[in-house]
Length: 319
Image (cartoon, rainbow, N blue to C red; front, side, top):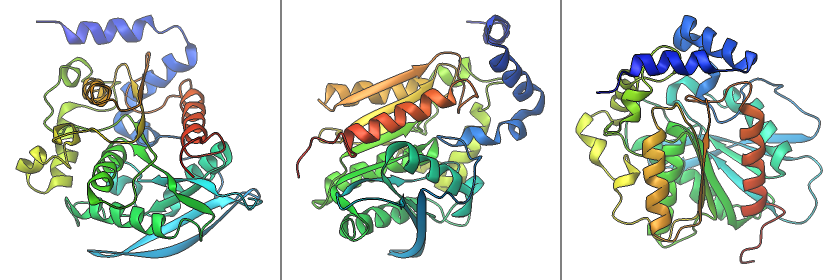
């Protein structure tokens, strides 16, 4: 049996970048509190307003009640329809509230040139599976129906998020494919949860001080989301278990080499590839769960390129 504690110590001792080495030292000493920003796909730091981005709030009616939703777009957008990014944010109750992700969404608009639609779904433990997912799917249907009104196009929508937000985005993609209506053009899955069974070696290999996530913490989060631990086998909770992934949209998966979610991300990418889905997986060396100051600029740039290529100015699909 491999000595994972020895491996952890060797890994952190071998880090050469001083910024990265200091980052992990602080995570190891401060635990989860020092890694708050690691639950999002891009930095939460930034301004609530920006002269180049405008936003307003709408209310989407879902099957479980209203879903407050914020729409962000470039201030000087022309008449040409823009791509749309449906942001299903991560960490459930940790990122509750539209204001929490506003700096992040402003940055996505500026980097990609896309419209961002951000639904504030009902989080656990007050609302458990499938309520958060139903809220996000209702926001997708609203976005597709109102795409032209907000300056976009219904066939140029990408859903995405980080961690459990990526889980929601992946499930929305499956629901959209199976509903017989509008489908997603792309999905962006950052450090995604795609299998809640916790049955991968990376949960043991990357479990320990400094790694941000742990097996125990993931089980706690998944149980809180599901309400009933047996629901982890549901194919819209563990999307890797869905009957078929054929027909899902172009996908970018971005995950850390030292993330507990690494192996399931690889398994999902392989399953998508085997089903002839256009999928790219990026495994970030020396990254745990969530961005570090060293990896964040690379992650943001990769995401912006993906959005521009799949739904934005570089879009080459059907019109």
